[in-house]
Image 1: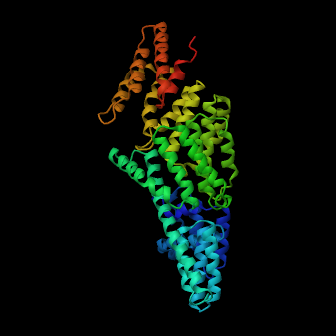
Image 2: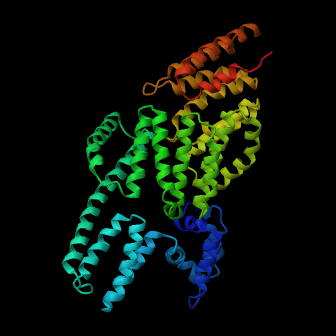
Image 3: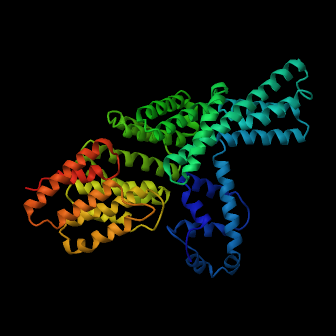
Length: 489
């Protein structure tokens, strides 16, 4: 039985430092530690295979029979050691630990000590704008006024109750903005919403605008998320310059709060990667590498963050080299990229995987290495059915025609041309004008009566595509235009 397994996934996600800490914590336990054998067996598997593990445990009948129980124990013990290992690194956990201390000390009647732990939690939650945690902390502080802080009781009560009300309002705004943030992110990146649902979200956002104008945006999260929403709205309105301006404001807010970057580096890097998308939409290449350096400069704390950094930086570096026509630099980067794709594949989202495959294919296409270009394009064409990047999936089917043409696979093209047209031209998703033009003109080029006639047809296609390229950003226009410009003398 091979496949995925929660324990296997958890163990494989551990960094060397986390594994070492886990082993140290195991040594502190008394008695037999047979679960360590299960840990080591699973850790050595790149792909989980339970049958293989059980076969190696057959000599230990007790361990073999209790395998499911041991796995469950091991899973939760690893989580326990991770909580301990990261207790000083995770801000939320530090606050929770303070509140646990408050409860423990309070239960022993040690109210003054509990008050100190409560003050520490208040300080941390305030510094990192944890509004949802601040509210119960303040409520607890109010209750302590009557048992610990009896001096100036009316004044302190007034201050604290006012702060609770302010926080409630600020948290309500922050929560609403988070909801809109993810709805807009979904609108940007997927086709999951119907036209009616999209319309409703945009109408709700318009109705919410007056509340934003009067709401408390002093929260770090409210301030930067608001700029991200404005940026997404600008993208939906096809306003790339406005989109970039708002995202630059979001990044400026992050960089004005360096302690947030230190606490949540993975989120900061994610937003820097989104900034690169904005620069790409505006074709602003002069600052591209500077932002990539910023992402690389922020340390990754675990394998997951390593993967996120790789897919952001490697993808955008390749994009930069392609768009600035530095093909030699792009080709030189492929060795590192292909190793990275293999290493982090399980952590890279499918949309980005398709983008990697497509851009690598286009690079080889521009270098006239059509066999390699076809290999990478086939990784997309032959991929199991998915809704990710349907634009790349669609055009890959068309682009393969041009690769096979350059490779001289004319007999194959007799069949493939009709097959591609049938596959793409469906009632629910008919061929676009550009797709229709490309397929019909390719057919004429393929069956041209002479080489001179073929060159004339390619030149005519080039002129039509140059007109389309002025107004359209449809995927594939630039690639086919580049093909028509190739030297065929």
